[in-house]
Length: 92
Image 1 (cartoon, one colour):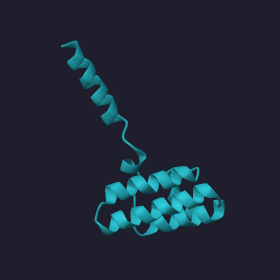
Image 2: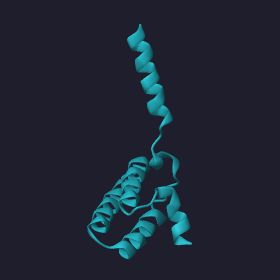
Image 3: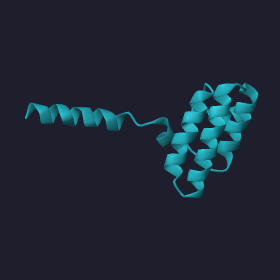
Image 4: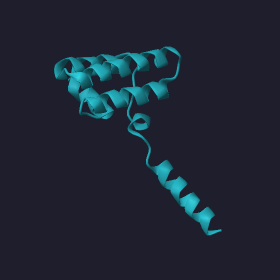
């Protein structure tokens, strides 16, 4: 019985800690361009990895897997030292 309570508590904590990709607005048209612009400004190996993640995210968008694409875009933004939710502010 105690094991079930602990398992439920852990599951509830995992649900409460939603990833950034789930909460940040993702546009399959503007988000890749914003990340590419930031990667071009940053340069380096992290930027190259971010560009690769963006390309994967765009393929996922084309396959109508927007949630999974958002995860890739969030990973790319993190590699560049920012959060996905901060990208619209960077472009302004």
